[in-house]
Amino acid sequence: MTAAMRPELAVVGDDPSLLTQLRADAAALREHTGVPTSAFAVRSRNAGELSVALRSLPGEVAAVYLTGAEPGKARAAQRDLALGGGIPVITEEETTGIILTAAALVRSRRLEVAPFDAKIVVAGSDTMPLLVPLLVASGVGDVVAWRSGDAPGYPLGTVAESATVVVDLVGAFEGAALTMPSDRHAPLLPLPGLFAALRRGLVARPVNDPLYQLDVHRACAHALTTLTPVDRLLPELSDPDVGTRVLDAIVEALRPPRKR
Image 1 (cartoon, helix red, strand yellow):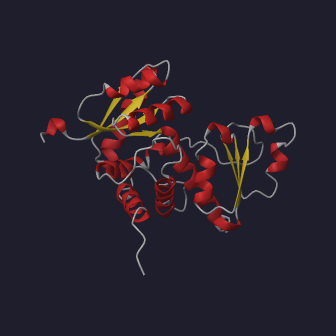
Image 2 (cartoon, one colour):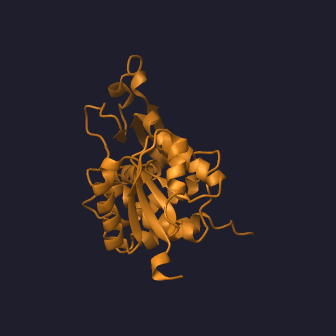
C-alpha cells in the first residue's frame, strides 16, 4: 500500500459551514494521536442523501466519524452503510455518550459513591438515546431518564433529589450538573482506539440495533476513566496512552469467556 493510500479516518460534517472546525478536529487527531485523518463537509436533506455522500468519499477512507448531523439521520445512514457493506461509521452520538458516561463515573467516584450505589439523572435523555443504556451497562445502580415533556408531572428538581450526578443535555437543571464538555475535542477521545479496533475487524457493524455495541462503548468509557487526571473530568487528547488504552479495553471486552 502506498503512502497515498494509507487507511484514513475521515471526519465528516453534515454542514458545509463546519469545514473549518472539521479541519481543526482532523489536525488535532493527526497531531496528538498519529491517526491519518482527513476532513470533509457534505450537505444532505435526509439519511438517503447522507448515505450517498458517505459512499462517495475517496477510496483511502477506511472509517468515518460523522458529526453535525441530526442523531436520527446519522444512525439511519450508519445502518444503511452497514447493510450495504459500505464504510464503517462512528457517530458523534456514540463518542459523546462515551465521554459523558466516563465523566459521570469519574464525578461519582470523586464523591466516593460506587457506580452500583449511584443515582444518575439524565435530563433530555430523548436527545441521546444511547446514554441511559450505556450508563446502565456501565454498572450505575439507578439511572433516571427525564425528558422536557415530563416537566409538568415530574419537575426536574424533584426528580433530581438525592441524585449523585445530573447529566443535563438540554439546559433544564438549575443546580450543578454535568453538561456537554466545553472542549470541542473531547468527543474525539475514543476515536483512535475505535478506529484501530475497526481496522482489526473487532467491532461489528450496526444493522438494526442502535445499541449494537454497548460492550464496546462501555469499555471505551471505562478506559477513559482510568486515564483521567485528578484535576479533570476527562483525559486530554494529547495523552499518548489514550488510543492504546481504549483499544486494549475493547479487545478485553470482546474476548470470548474462558472455558472452565
